[in-house]
Image (cartoon, rainbow, N blue to C red; front, top):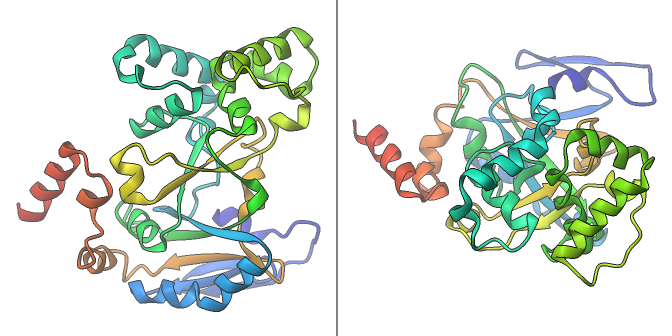
Length: 302
C-alpha cells in the first residue's frame, strides 16, 4: 500500500512527510510506528474501540510482511490466477475429491482451498491484533511491516448461510469469461446459470441477481470447524467481481479522512516474534497442524 500513501482521492494537494525513512502523504495517511508488542495496544486504545461501537461498527486486522502489499485476495494478485479461477476451483475438486466430501457449500470448499494455499477470492482477517503482528513480522525481513486496521459496518458482516455470501461463493465455478458477462449484466443465459448454481445449494434463494450484487464485498464470520480458524480467531472477506480495483479500501479505518497504518520499525521486526512467543503466539499455535508444529520445533531447537 506504500504507493497509495502519495495520493489523496478527490484532492490534488499532497503534503509529504518523512519519518523513520518512510515518505508519505500527511493529508491521506496517519502512520503509527510499532517498536514493541505493547505499542499496538496503545494505538488500538479503548477510546477508538468505544467510538466504533457507537457507530455500529466492528474492528478487524490484517498483517502484511511487506507494506507494498495491496488489499486484494490471492486470486487477483496475478492476471493468470484471475483468468484461471474457475479452472483452479474445479481442478482441485477433481484431483482431491476426498478432501471435500464433508463440504456441502461452495463457501466451505473455498475455505478449505484457502486453508491449503490455493488462490481464492477469500481475504483472511482476524479480530486479534497480536496475531496479525506475528503474521506481519514472520517473513520478508528486508521490508517494512504493516498492520491495517479495518472498520466494518455491521450490516457488511454476514454469516456463512447468508444469501449474499452464497451468491459470491458460487462465482469461482465459472471461468473469467463468464464473469465478464456477470459484471456487465449483458447475458441472461449466464445469469441463469449462476442462479441455477445457487439454487442447487440453497433452493429457497429467490432474489433476482443485479449487477451491483456481484460487485460487493462482505466480511464473513468463519465457521469454527477447523483448528487453524479457531487458533487464529479468523474471519475473512468474501470478494465480488470488482475486488481487484481497490474496493477493499472501503473497510480501512479512517479518522479525519486519514487512513490509519501501523508500521513495525526495522529494528524491531525480529524481536517482536520473540516477545509474542512469550504469550504462546508462534507458528505452532497459529498453525496447529502437525507438519507446522514440527517445522516450528525444528527451527526453535536446531
